[in-house]
Structures are given as C-alpha cells and as structure tokens.
Amino acid sequence: TAGSAGSHKNSSYHGMPTCGAAGSNRKDDHVRLALAEHADQRANAFDDVRFVHHSLASIDPSQVDISVDALGTHWDSPFYINAMTGGSVKTGAINTALAQVAQAASVPMASGSQRAALRDSAFEESFATIRQWDPEGFVFANVGPDVGVEGALAAVRMIGADALQIHLNSAQEIVMPEGARDFSSWPDRIAAIVEACPVPVVVKEVGFGMSASTVRRLASLGVRAVDVSGSGGTDFAHIENARRAGHEYAYLDGWGQSTVLCLLALIEAGEDDDGARNASRSDGLGIRSVRGPETSSGSMIADAHLGGLQNLPASADAVDAHGATEGVAGLTVFASGGVRTPLDVVKALALGARAVGVSGHFLHVLASRGPEGLTAEINAWKNQVRSLMALVGAATTADLTGTDLLLTGRTAQEASLLGVN
Ligand code: FNR
Picture 1 (tube, rainbow, N blue to C red):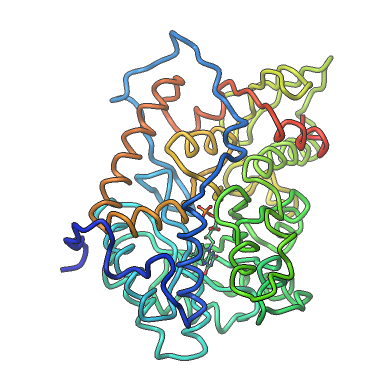
Picture 2 (picture 1 turned 90 degrees about the vertical axis):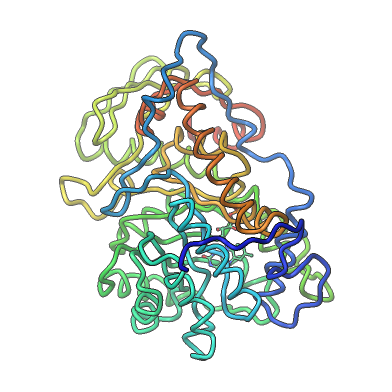
C-alpha cells in the first residue's frame, strides 16, 4: 500500500545503483557519483557557525514546536527531502523509495528534474511514482527554466505537485559535456513560468549558492521564494568532471558560495531593503538594531567586526505587506547544500532559512540503510532538532533567529569581503 516503507534490511539497498557500478544513463551517473562523493564528506561552512552556549537558556523540549509555515501551508518538519532524481529505471526506484519515506516520516519531498519525461513520456512513471506513494504529502515538481511555461505546467500536472522548483544550474551545464551554454533566456522564462504557474514557485540553485543580487533579480521577475542551495555538500562541478574523460574543468570543483555565506548575505540584503522601504533601521556605533518584517523580536548585530558575537536578525518572511516585488526582505528563503546533521538544520534556521533541504546525506542513508533506515534517520533528526532548539532556548523555529551565534574562520572572512557584518 502507499506509504508502507519497504523491508530492505540489507546494508545495501537493491534498488540503488552502488558505487562503482557502470551507468549508461546520466541520471544513474549522478546518483552513483553523488554517493561516491559523499564517502569523503568533509568539513564545511556550517562548522564556521557556532551557537553561544547559555547554561540557563534551555526550555522544556515538549514545549518546542519544530513545524514551519511555508508556501501557504503548514509543514510538521522544518527540513525536507530536496530534489534529486528520476528519468531512468533505477532512479524511478529511488523516487519510489524516497516517496515511501516522505510519506512514512511526514516530510515534504521534491522530485528531480522532470525534463526527461517532458521529452519522452516513457519516463513519466519514474516521477509519477512519487505521488502514488505519497498521496497526501507536500510534493515539489522540478524543472529548469528552459522547459518554458508549457513544460513547467506539465511537470506540475505529472505529479500533482503542491509547488514547483525551478533549478538554476549554469555551473553544472558548463562542466557537463552535453550541457547547455546559453542561459540568456532564463530570466524571461522564469518570469513567464511564475506568472502562469497555479502553485507556488521556488527558484533554487543546485549546490553553487545564490548571491543577494541574484535573489534581487529573481524578486524583480516576480519570484517570491528561493532555495539558495549553496556549496559544501554535493558538488555538481566535481560530479560532471568525473563523467568526462579529460576532466577539463577540474579547476571548477568547489565553485560557488557556501549555504551559510548565502544566508548571511540575504540577512544583510533584507535589512538594507527593509530599511530603504521603511526607514526603520537605525545605525549606531558599530551596533545596529534591526527588526524582522513579521516578528516582534527585535534583534541586534552586537559587533560589526566579524568573528565577534552576532545576534542575528529575524528572517525575511512572507509576502511584503507593501506589495514590493523587488528586494529580498519579503522573500521566503529556503536553504540547502551541505546539510549533514540536525545541528546544521538548526543553524540554517537560525540564519533565516524558513526550512532546510537535504539531498546528498539522505541519498547516502537510503543507499546504505534502505527506506526503513532513512525513515528512522529522519524521525531521529526531528527529535534532535527539537532537543537542540530546547538547548538554545528556542520554542519555535522563528525564535531561532534571535539566538546568539559566533561566526569564525573562512566564512567570517568571506562575509567580511562581501560587506556582510
Ligand atoms: C541533485 N540536485 C538536483 N537539483 C535539482 O533542482 N534538480 C535535479 O534534478 C537535481 N538532481 C540531483 C541529483 C542528485 C543525485 C543529487 C545528490 C542532487 C541538487 C540538490 O537538490 C541540492 O541542491 C544539492 O545536492 C545540494 O544539497 P546537498 O546534496 O548538499 O544536500
């Protein structure tokens, strides 16, 4: 029946391509190489963010609410299974397994790019399986801007999607042997899709990060939600390099901005935009007091020098009451890219993300422990997010944006160079 997770108890799940297996299909290659890449998962910018420990801050975990409001609906979980796959027999099996997990653990889930099925209806089943196995869950369709309005609407219909992700993957396309090279039509196509789409649209990166100016540009196109999907986890420059004999673009491995840096830049940009519109920002002697657009919890950046103690502002929130279509202050911001633990989830939420997407780590758990193992992992993450929120004294996910954070290392330096402080 829909939602009953399979009973794969072996250490390797038979529906998954294993590392080293030959893959003729690009989608199979991506899964195989993403899993291989995960094997040497490394430190990333989330390690440059630390919560200041306050011994008396803790609250009762039973009073912690980890749910979030996003895209006009309510999610039990502040994290979700982000876009990965579909478009081959093997990856259809992965989508089935992921949908079983999403249903069993009650988390939202995104399809991988549906372009293959838009070109050849024989592949539709590998995506439609998501809705079959997760009939009530929140599901994202996924396309690139190049498919245009008709393709985007067809992708939404194909899986009865609640929202649409449009992925921006120019860095991947450049490295990809068969990749597209002309991205000049993307802005117009994105604007047209947003205009026509009956469900909310989230424009996302694929692990290279989104700058504040990109997000501003997207806002001017009518986009109301983004997933910054930064570097630090799955690296599609590395993956595409591994797929071509000459590895010509090996020097692009690691391209892009970390998820943490993207979130910091958007906090700064949100303050600027909010301040410009409402003249509500006050600057002092290295101390600024700022107020998030929706929450009453004012917050402070208590030290303009990076590396110092920062009490970060409340996140940019739902649609701007003034109806502004430009600027980032009113956008819903999702974060993904390099999320390895429940602590990374809580850090991303504290840095203003509305909810947090996870791809590489969940794929790895599915491959090694099967759907039951991934369901158990996600349920454990939910409990740990609750405990961590209690530890830092946040009763709600919105409260996390008022917690004290320390920013150190390379991320502090990069933030300084971007003028984020
Ligand atoms: C992806 N990702 C992705 N994104 C997207 O929008 N459409 C897609 O088809 C895919 N395909 C895909 C395949 C595989 C195997 C992986 C691991 C990832 C990118 C994904 O949604 C996310 O943006 C990045 O992977 C960064 O997150 P992680 O993996 O570091 O958690």
